[in-house]
Image (cartoon, rainbow, N blue to C red; front, side, top):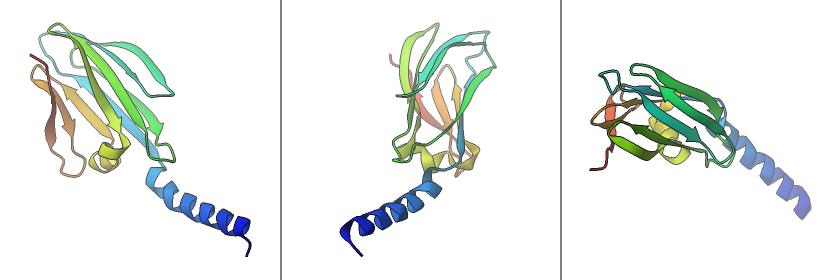
Length: 134
């Protein structure tokens, strides 16, 4: 087998190994649990997709579906603001952090007056992930 044929075979094997890792649709949701009727502004995006600015009423949520890219670098980040926090930047989905942590349930976030909690799909417990700046 020539060098080019070996290279093609190797590429097919590598792609075959990667597809199960990144295949499938993921879901991210961010719920406003600030209470007392407080609305929050939210603007989420990736390198390729801008989900637009959202105004999320107290008790409501915003979510979206996507698929991981083949090279495993998918990242969605958000800017969030509300009465006491003018702008807070956080990663709503990072392939490296969330591929396993979020699991099949998807990545769920709760925004509260204390900070942001993320659901650990492996344990089923909410974890305190981000604290508001002083």
